[in-house]
Image (cartoon, rainbow, N blue to C red; front, side, top):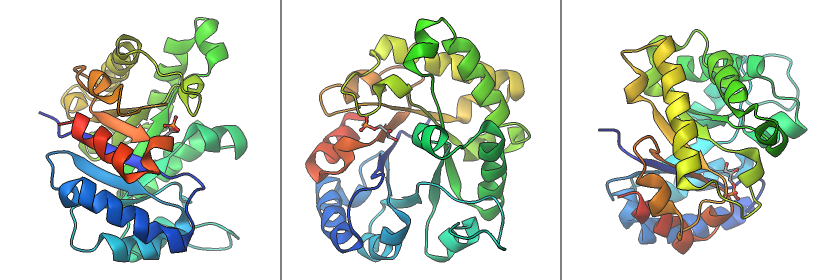
Length: 250
Ligand code: 13P
């Protein structure tokens, strides 16, 4: 049995001075994260110290939203896995579609970041997903198989340490959710792709759904056999809606 994992992706929202209040609300609403579901908040880099302090004594995990693959050096503006670890970060989102779309993230850089995150002992949440155009042109399967294969290349032995998030780009922030049947189809495809890479470990990988997951659709999505949690954007910015999604994963 895979433990479900529900992570909030705050994206570029909440000031450092606002982080503690939201986390306080999430602590209360999720019984300190002690609720049978792994609960994580992925906050902006500058919010990390405040979030780490506010999470002390709870079971809720702390995540970042990106990192560089190098350990240190002349990479102005970048943040390394070691820097995140030093602040108590345990998870990191890699290859979010917004980074692929706006910041030239590629499968090659996602793969480098994945290896660096694993090396540092961070739990990576690797995002994959097709655009609306790709889906309409019948390319969804090729896109997903290609992303999973390239992003996770060389990391087969560490599969149990990796979380994947299937986020159809057309469902992010649009209010359009994939139906649970549509999502399950892609999650099964992702698991079959993982099984080709390492048959012994594919069943251990948790695959989250992300894209307009809300309290009213979360239970239906997470009831599917290959949907092991959620990566939540908008609904993670409010403690009650985030906690309701966490509760739906029980
Ligand atoms: P929304 O839940 O706002 O659609 O965002 C999903 C997402 O991108 C999480 O990483």
